[in-house]
Amino acid sequence: MSLRITTPVLGNAAAGDVRAGKTFSGTAVTPGTAGTLPTQTSPGTITPGTSNQSFPAGIYDSGWSVKGDPNLVPGNIAQGVSIFGVTGTSVQAAGNATPAQVLTGYTFTSAGASGTQNGTMPNNGAVILTPSGTGTVSIPAGYHNGSGYVAQVSVPAANVLTGTTIAGVAGTMPNHGSPTWTPGTSNQSLAAGYYSGGTVQGDGNLQAGNIRSGVSIFGVSGNVTPRQYAQGTTSCSGGTVTFYCHGTSGNQSLYYVTVSGLGFQPSLIFIFVPVTGAITVYAANANIDNYGDTIYCASGGLFYLDGSSAYVNGGTFQLPISKYQTGSNTIYWEAYL
Image (tube, rainbow, N blue to C red; front, side, top):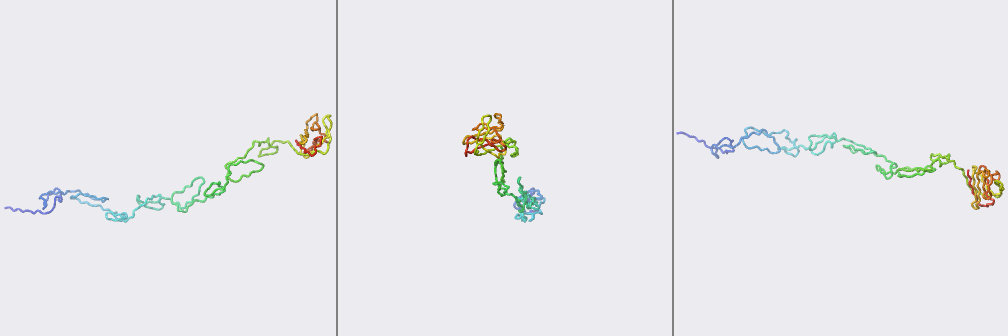
């Protein structure tokens, strides 16, 4: 008689709890049931990221680990942010400044840039600008401390044309336009102010042949020797004297005129009385009838100078006028050298 010992079936494992390729028995399965739990390859070291990392169920024969980082401390995490349960305390850089917008000698941080940056904006301090009369004056780029200024420009109003304003100064210089000046016997003063042009009149007659010798007009010396001339009025003599005729026509007693103070000895003399029509003409060297100097008297004929009753001597002359008394009628005379 053989003795059979039966081992009681115990355990509550299921196929999914047993490694695949292995069999087992249990109260809930048939003895010799094969396991289905897969064997998985170890992932080694897991580095945490921004999203969850899933791993399949199974048996991992090799160990594995989740990587840690010594920088995962509050000072390296932005204030108000929690990473894996660590709440940050670091103030995060913000702003959009660039180095050219920050004063040289100063540092800053800004969003989008790593670390501390150095400013490059020039420090101009107090800049003093002087206006230019020939072009614009550039303002240097950079920082100005507010104490700079544009230097004052001295603009005398009298040196600025009226109607024009420079640096806030209204001009008072008169605008005379383009006048025309006619030369005269005295200097003409030009009023101070602005002239857009102007004309000094010329004259085609300003020539030496039109100017008396010894006279200069505006630098033109004359070469004309003028004939001396004198004229005037006088009255008839109170009585008559004898004047001597050419040839044998006989001498005549005539009234006469006497004029003195001419300053030259005339060679041609006219004497006339407009009211009566009486006229006398004297011509030196006329040589009529072989008499050199001749006197023509309308009421008496031709006479010659005898040096006593009829004469032309220096600046004085005495000549016949009429056989009739002219009374209070005005007698006119003209004498030429």
